[in-house]
Image 1 (cartoon, rainbow, N blue to C red):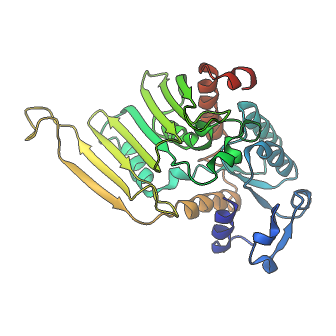
Image 2 (spheres, one colour; image 1 turned 135 degrees about the horizontal axis):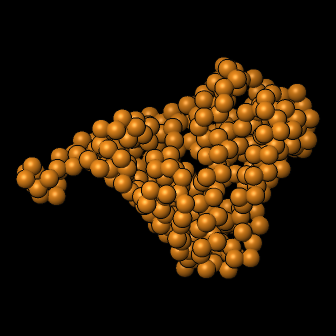
Image 3 (spheres, rainbow, N blue to C red; image 1 turned 90 degrees about the vertical axis):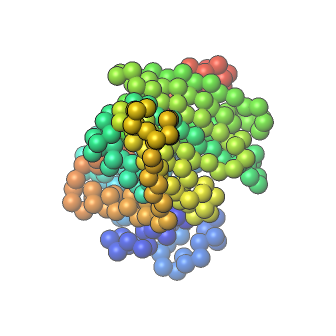
Amino acid sequence: MGQIRHHIIEKNNNYDLKIICDSKPHKINDAQKFRVVRDVKDVIESDVQAVFICTPNHMIPKLTVQCLNKGKHVFCEKPPGRTLNDIKKMQIAENMNPTTKLMFGFNHRYHPGVARSKSIVDSGRFGKVITLQGMYGKSGGKDFQKSWRNKFEISGGGILLDQGIHMLDLFNYFLGKFTSAKAFLANQHWGFDVEDNAVVIMKNDQHRLAVLHSSSTFWKHMFSLNIYLEHGYLKLQGLLSKTGSYGRETLVIGKRQFEDQSEAVGNPSEETIYFDKDLSWELEIGHFTNYIMNDLPVSESNSTDAYNAMEIVQRCYQDSDYPIYKTNF
């Protein structure tokens, strides 16, 4: 993630990259253009105005709070720490430093298929959202078992917190804050101390439902978001990525038809839209830039959005019978 942010920042003329802090500075090829340090204090004590935090989860809250308390704007990767208390600490620091901007890396909101879906939902032409259904998963891959993302003391959770939180954020984006959740967690393959599969059922205060299966045993990269509305449905399949491993980003739009209106019962006509260019990273950083330069409140991917996503994760972990979360989360 640090490499991605580095690349996008250097493409944005509003930024002047001053320092990169990395534990392996030899990996940074163009280090002659800026300072490369190993100690985060060199960043925190510097005169830079904005900091991008791209670290493992256990380091996020402390670094974010320290930077905010130094009056620096912060863009922070997801998830917002390991627990709900972590995001609460960041919100306290944010409120104590009202001139700073705090934004989180929920870049899926800015993917073209998601953005088109949101515009359709917000237009109201298909009525209100009735229910959501999502699948998001990984293939595992080389050295997956050794990744810090699967170590509780560093990550704070398994696949639900690591990747599923993106889908939970989209659920909130399309349907609003959920008030209850039922979760089933399992680890039937990898042998982590955290889950490798999570099936979650949620309900909001209007009794509208959402279901997510988050997995690291799909054996292929998979992204699927179905949005069912009063007068139609949206099916978003695939996700543009650097590797292309999630498949082509595709949006299917279907309009509800009654049986006496349909040529094929239960199979309404559909429109399919394909997306081939992912500008989500640029758009996300563009929003952060705009908030800073025009002194605007952070209206998307803000600390409230991060809190709401993290709150669902906490509800799921507390609801499950997974031992490590019963005593630690």
